[in-house]
Length: 385
Ligand code: GLA
Image (cartoon, rainbow, N blue to C red; front, side):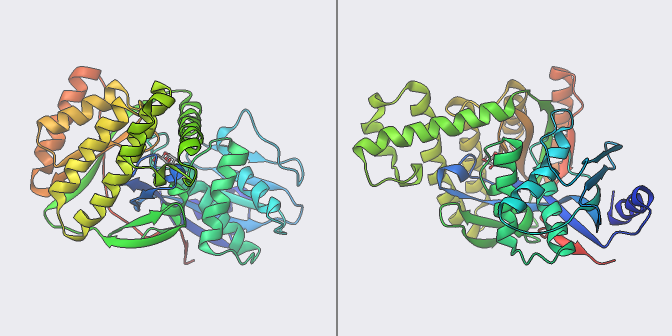
């Protein structure tokens, strides 16, 4: 898939060339999982795997979408946008239109064709790429004057309010603000950020796709989010100055352990510990201490499994096998309940490592392991015609 294929598909569907083409990448997250909606830091990056979107204005106020990879077409009956039970993918695009309107932006209808190579359901944020890409296109077509950060916030609101997934800001931020060969540390409490070069001839990142995506992921995610919020509201009675788990230390949490339910205590303990790990990871990266980074990744995984309880046996197997084969680091990545593990591996060892893990995975689970090399790329941008 590339820009040219999507432009051709646009021409075929809409009998006119597109006015603009956008490339919107997927993302990885080095460390800082489930910290974004708790006011903490995250360390994500945009990756080469992307969605390309070609777009053009319509004069009748309707919204028409062609999904090249799904071979599917959708058009609204008029300028109204209504949630679509039957077509999940359409809601990411209608959500963008709906939130842009809520914002008071004035624009007409448009045609959009898209396709890409961000695997769906693999935890690489194909939905965030679709949303930010559509907003970029809309911004260009109707000269809306949105900044990149406006696009990030609007895309998150589309997902929260229209799609109903109460995600944090990390995925959209990474998709828009990513930079080639760098990870970006975002402070989710004030949205300040800093780039860290991620270039080493000795170490590489590789994704292993478990091929598993459990149903009800979104509702489990929303429950975790509520559990964290309920932890904060209980702790606030004793620590009135806290705004989020960002302001809570492990010592404080332990002092008030008995006030919290077992589940809420475990969620909070994971988040508070993860925030500490992201802090250490930042300085490890600055000093090129990849071994430290790898150790932290394993610790994150253990916390996601035992305390946050969002891992699954297949993913645990991938991480354990990586550990046995001496990967520098390995962990479940993203929201949970399936998707990919992110592995930090000595570059020279990659071929042997990949062969060993995929053989073991096939024997134990009967699943062909999909492997995606990771190259860190620039965030969402217009593609020259
Ligand atoms: C999903 C969400 C993000 C973030 C991660 C977990 O990807 O969309 O906002 O919370 O899970 O770190």
